[in-house]
Length: 183
Image (cartoon, rainbow, N blue to C red; front, side, top):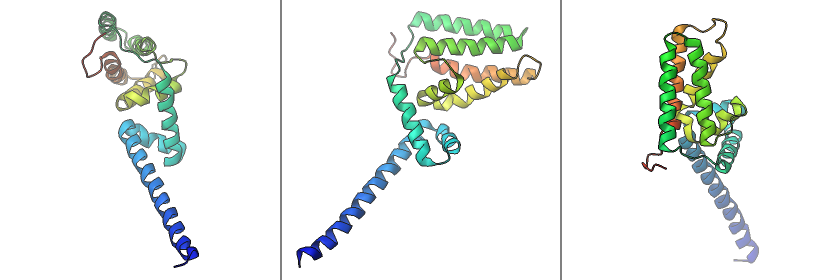
């Protein structure tokens, strides 16, 4: 066999193998992102218009998150936050709209104390999506209700639901990692 014939066989085979390898790598990365971001992956695909754009967006979120100084809170500060939450819940009975606003503020302060930037809602959601994608819909739902408070636009039942939603993210942000190490 001549060198030209060998090259005509080897080069296309190499191109096919490289293409197959890249495809398998991209599929594995996509599955990893789907597993890591859960329902947030599908939401991002819809928002960005496709899987490749979503993959880039979520990778970007992960990189930004990795640069943040996210920390666990000391036990005494966690207890203080838990006490504050209890007071906010108690207030709900008499002043539901005010309690929802306080719950939103408390979650934001907790995020800030943990090391999350809190400069804008969309960026907060993006930053939370890396570690808290499973409770992110709770936060979105609660925030939407809070945005409608103030003019009696939210029903008491919606406000109650918002408190439950805020609580889901609050608990997740407050708890130490599953390894059980406390600072």
